[in-house]
Length: 308
Image 1 (cartoon, helix red, strand yellow):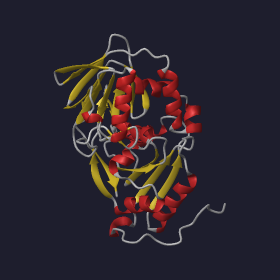
Image 2 (tube, rainbow, N blue to C red; image 1 turned 90 degrees about the vertical axis):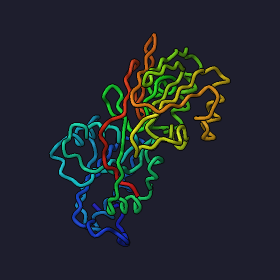
Image 3 (tube, helix red, strand yellow; image 1 turned 60 degrees about the vertical axis):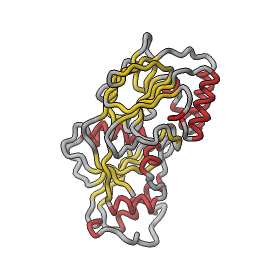
Image 4 (cartoon, rainbow, N blue to C red; image 1 turned 180 degrees about the vertical axis):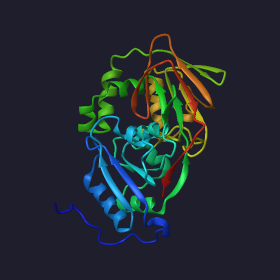
């Protein structure tokens, strides 16, 4: 079969050790952001530069985690082509792999908040160049009931939306699916108080977000002091979710001033517990994660992630 695309020139300014590098590109072909032409371009650039590259498409749910956990995974770089949920699956698998390779991310999912955090490129040539140059930074993460999350773990309205969104709607409308689902749930929901025990301090709110990075829901800054490349978590507590408070929170989110908004508390922590009188929905990295109670803590380990 004739390839969809072939490179017209080699990538300049590559590190000498690029030749011979082994790379596995792992992609979910059923995801909304799946782009075979983009992946073929990246594979062609890497191969032309002297890498041994395998492009593998998943065939069942959970396969990314299975591949990442396999101790026989003998590659220099595992490149995940997908959104934040796919990266989360890889990191979960790495927890039981004694010789996990370095991680690279090819942003092509519905949500790519980690790409914003690290300033990852989206163009094929730039992605290939980053993998070839192989400059890494430490990637820190949190644990929710022992399960890793890279970006956030939250309880409240946003988690209800994640629980309520249909896969078909998400594939058809992308990010707009979250808006449609939020409007539908928002008209009929009855919020609950969420109790938070943060390193001995106690808070109560309607929305609680443990964040490992600066951004939330895309390019919206919620905690300027946080970074996925440094150890430690922050918790954001929205005390009320009445219409006025919700509008104020939304405007502050758009302006990047949530951490200074009225009715919002942001606190650094090592361990926190979210609990409520009745179960409240929880999500991690944009995927449903059961209900409260949930114990949140900063992981002691770190991973190496490829950056530009």
